[in-house]
Length: 345
Image (cartoon, rainbow, N blue to C red; front, side):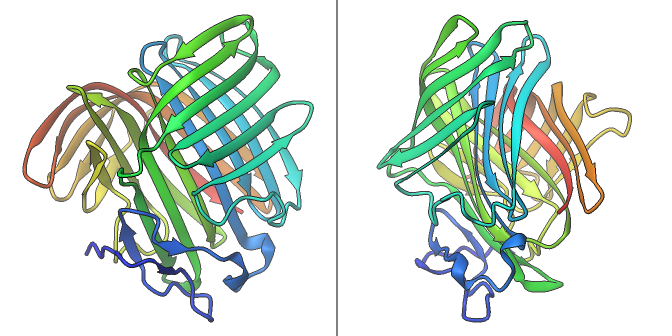
């Protein structure tokens, strides 16, 4: 079942449950953390951007998150040419919703900094600006430091994939999310002493905007890609593994800034290694893809009560995607990422 929600409305009722679960083409749910029936330790809020330069063959991923018990800030540089990753991150204990993350992905500004890194996100109308730097980050080729000033354009008529779902075992636990693919990127990234200019013809971003009250143990799968296909914007978002998705999946093709909704998908990950080829298939036969990994951005944290095992794998997709009208798109060596993440927090 794919229940599409079209009316703008409050997300939660007075009992802290989602009023109307499903998916939407725009941000129709109004989030108010005061309506959540849980301790601030259980509320998760994050803004995450991934920007990929097809021409320069690198990605940068920036995380600004408040997990309740702690805040996590991270900047990662993924070199698709060498297959290597550099990352710097920092944790602020007991953030408890005090970072100033906005209640919507509309116009806003948010910033945080310490000696290791600084991050600032803002939006005004169709333009999102990302400012981030890590002066001491050692890059895969030995250069030191990253400093970026990027503008991501989200045209007002473009659609995004929005979802609001709860957990069967606890309906006051919920996941509200917006994925915005195919954001055209322009700006500069300074790598060491070298300035790289990114342009909207070859660099694209995705926003992962999430708010929710989660259960303690979860595992999810997510894949995303954005770019151009025969001079038309093309991307996809695939996600599953947590919360009750009986009302809607988080799977869609984004073509010419329009959502083409998919049903369920399955990631087949070889047990031998995350860097061996994957397959991703949909039950409606509209998405059939092979994923050839280049690099596994991995982390393994075990602090007894808090445990996180993450594999965000960057590589290239080849296969077919079928639009709502039956048009079959042929995809070959299209850059993106797919991940498998386990969290106990």
